Length: 307
Picture (tube, rainbow, N blue to C red):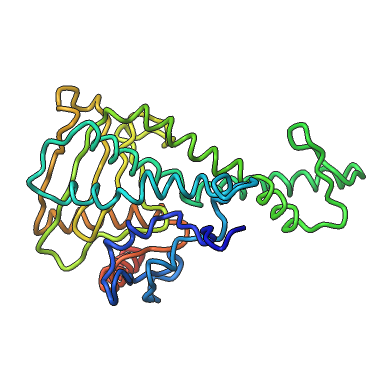
């Protein structure tokens, strides 16, 4: 591996996280974060050091280009263009955009929906439960293996944790390629849907984000599936703005390349903050990210509501 190859790879881009932070040095941004299991303990962290994992997207291959293909795709096609997306969405005067700009915004939202590690965690946890049951049944039958699909899984001399780790390692490349493939397929389905932007002002709290920042809400209340075309996708883009991608069928006559903008203040703004922050809390895998005051205020609200 070349010294120039990226090892620590962000599954939530630094360019995205920077918009929630405060700059301390040239291009060094800090945010506050808290583990969702203990929101009382917030801590400052550089955006270059959070929501990343070593070799998450690194593929097998003889050349750097082959090994870094997914990392380079996200960097060149999404992250390097994020400031353009951000400037469009946070400019209150922009109502009409080009088809190219619309596609870039949709690409940004949907690739961020799928590239996070939570999908892998959910799948690997499910496989872990399958392994546990398989070992139990095989042991009762006096066998040292069980069958998963068409493969024999031998477990003699291995712990369940070792089996899970071996499986996750063997499937990593397939999983990240599948996640990207699913994103590209969903983009083709949702590229004509409606863009909305909600802006809040005049309230002490603000929008937070997380390590799984694109949330899904089903307008008809059905079980949520990522490919359901009736889902609303929502993404906070800084402490005051949230972008949504809404089903075209809800407003068939609304122009495809227009941004619907809503401005809230006072109690309506406070409601929007609470809705977003609960969605981020529920969708997060590990971390809530934002400013210290908002995270602590949200935790206080949750504790009062629980009691």
